[in-house]
Image 1 (cartoon, rainbow, N blue to C red):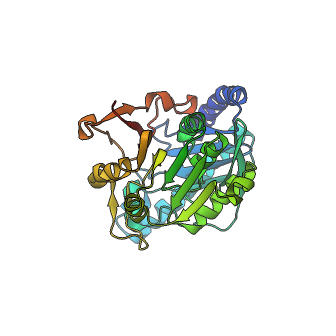
Image 2 (image 1 turned 45 degrees about the vertical axis):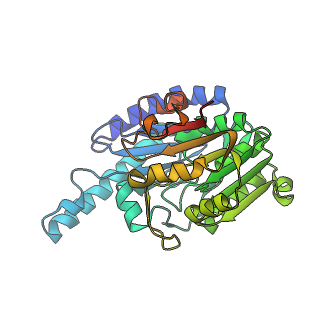
Length: 335
């Protein structure tokens, strides 16, 4: 093996032995295996049944740091050899062929968001798998996008939404592939409205509904997929005095999509965005707000009329112990 590949092999073997038993007990087939556990190996690796999707983060000897073209070329060749070695180690540790291990370069989140390519297609292989979480299924694409269509670190939030949604009207903003909407519908929600600006992801949401036998609910209007700028949608909903019992607000940290009016920066705009959503809450309703922005924290004094509860600790699952997961809060009107 090459470089630190033996370290990766040993780490993955140990993690896999532990987590596959836990996954079998809990009825899931996808989980986080490795998250930059070893400083010299800046990879994130997620297992999806019999395949792996992962991210490659920048190393200290990144070709971009080269002083000239020759040095850059040498570093690029060394980087390719290193990555091939890491892939071979993962294949050996997990017993998965290398052609089912997909590794994509991941730049810093803000760089990707400013350039607008956080959801851009990077391949056309269309390698799909179905993820199981109990009796709920989700379709993931391991090859074509930086993200697979399912955030594994939100697994417990999906379960929480499923248990809280019975008989309620649910609004899912920035719905992405509608996984939280599926959980709400499976949990017995009376109405589920999913809003996103991307046709691609709303169509993906339809697939997720169909995988769970929810076509009838979609056909009779209990499930709606709404292609819209979320900021414009909530303004229109407020004007129409629309109300929901559960609102799920999980915005990107930054977005400057050409299809939006203006830009969205959560560090700057979070208070206004949350306040505008709180207007849409029915009496006794709950807003779930999440953010993956590093270091983000919500101050309860920003919303004095509401009870703000930090849910992060209870949402951290076994495969993310000791790892950073998105901030998550609930806001509900004080009695």
